[in-house]
Image (cartoon, rainbow, N blue to C red):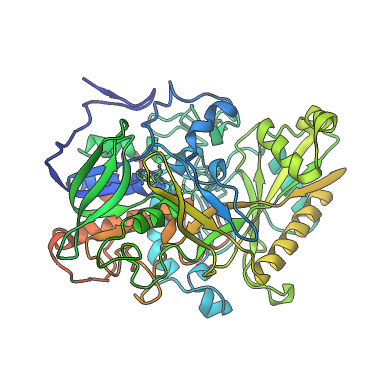
Amino acid sequence: MSHRLGSMQTLPSPMRRFRESDIVDYCIVGVGSAGGVLVQRLARAGFRVVGLEAGPFWNTEKDWVSDEKGSHELYWNDLRITGGTHPLALGANNSGKGVGGGSVHWAAFAPRFHPSDFRVYTEDGVGFDWPMSYWDLKPYYELLERELPVAGPAWFPWGDPHGHPYGPHPLGGVGDVLVRGCTKLGIRSVAGGPVAILSASHGERPHCIYRGFCLQGCKVGAKASTLITHVPDAISHGAEIRAHAMASRISLRDDGRVDGVVYFDREGKEHLQRARAVIVSGYAIETPRLLLNSACPGHRHGLANSSGTLGKYLMAQAGNVVAGKFDELIRLYKAPPAHALSEEFYETDPRRGFARGFAVQTVGPLPVAFAKQMVAAMGAWGWGMRQVMLDYNHWATLGVLGEILPWEDNRVELAEEKDQHGLPVAKVTFNLHDNDKKLIEFGKNKVMEIMWAAGAKQVVQESRFAHLVGATRMGSDPATSVVDKFGRTHDIPNLFVCDGSILPTQGSANPGLTIQALAARTADYLIKQGDAIFYSNRRALQEPGIRYDLSPPFTRFKGNPHIA
Ligand SMILES: Cc1cc2nc3c(=O)[nH]c(=O)nc-3n(C[C@H](O)[C@H](O)[C@H](O)COP(=O)(O)OP(=O)(O)OC[C@H]3O[C@@H](n4cnc5c(N)ncnc54)[C@H](O)[C@@H]3O)c2cc1C
Ligand code: SF4
């Protein structure tokens, strides 16, 4: 009997199922961008692994439709409370729900962070330094760029300059606007990536056909998501992915070590999955929520929260969208939304009057998303909205992706409201601070300038935010952080966190590649430590050495061009 996950994911054998009484080695909560990579690595290394996933196991063929409204189910739509001076839009604007998590609906822009992102406090006196350097992560960036794989320009000039394993995509109408506007103003830009979308076939996966439904999951299979890049390999190596399993609490033994995860199945029945170690990979909101909901005697304020920082220093990137109307046809929907960018303004420039910077990127909203943006950007409504939408094919949209700093008052807490399982939901508070406001103002104006320079006849903009990270941050000091540089909680030796929530700062690169590179590094660390994780409290902090042999098929022998 074969296990069929979708048209391209027919596996030769059924998925392994552990019994309720089995004690597995690792129980991973959340099989998304990070969880998918972790589960694959640990299964390949021979560990007994269960991935608990709150959402469904997507069948790409049957469950997905090339339609904006029909893809609503891809998101975490459960109740969340939002507040603060600049409340974040939750739901479709942040995390996924279902195997693959946010990597199912991401646009797949895959730039690396810059070396300076790991030393923000040292270089600019703001934010925090990471407990590791860019150079520790660089081999994992290169590895994940091959595994997804990433298509992009042969010369990416910013940060640590590098090439990409797959060639760039052709330029769509929006990319053309970005390149044209930047060129007019003397701003360097790149086109065709970096994006985790195939510009040529890869194993059984076909190349992109430029139909623009990337945020709807990509039925074609050209866009990378852990659902198709890592999960099939995990299952082939004996991992169980248990869908519709909503973790409610991490179970703690009397000796201060965790021994499993309590979860609700699809019917609302409670189970305990026992494990020798637990890794939480639930996203920047659900990870702190689960740890806070796991409060118990000895951990009154949540698990792994002796520092009091759990839930704090949540970040979102400034994601203002600038729309410009052109005489000529642009056709926003043709080509992946993610295919051209400039990181010319990424680093701190003291002349601008604020620390850190921003990127300029293409965005390609389909009609429903575009209509919503135009309500906010120009108050379009009724007949006015009809007029705007009649001209949909003449509009181009470019995005600011700006670094908002980590602030203590931006946080995830537990609300009084409960979800369908009776669990307190997350309350997300988000405030903009002085540096953030100055950065957004500058970035927004610069992108509008680029749009005018490209020849737009009308330019409007919508303020928004994107990409939540932080709230369970990593650091060397247990007094100011939740986990160490390998994601191990400072307080509980066999409890780990590995997802976007551990980022201390966020740069102005999209976070997905970094999150997956960190997951591969954490997996190498766990594999190197072997059984010591299960029995010992000793905290080894040496780099593990990279395990190239653990990559999924078809990725090992493709090279990244190295640029001297
Ligand atoms: C519209 C959109 C476009 C984006 N485009 C890009 C892009 O172009 N490039 C980029 O780098 N990033 C992009 N992102 C961001 C990117 O998707 C996320 O940063 C990334 O997926 C986060 O990874 P993660 O592992 O932290 O969490 P996720 O990938 O969200 O995984 C978390 C998983 O945990 C599960 N889970 C949570 N709680 C529980 C629980 N209690 N029990 C069981 N399971 C649970 C969830 O269902 C989910 O599947 C985009 C995001 C959005 C919303
Ligand atoms: S544009 Fe390419 S990556 Fe996006 S949905 Fe279409 S085939 Fe998939």
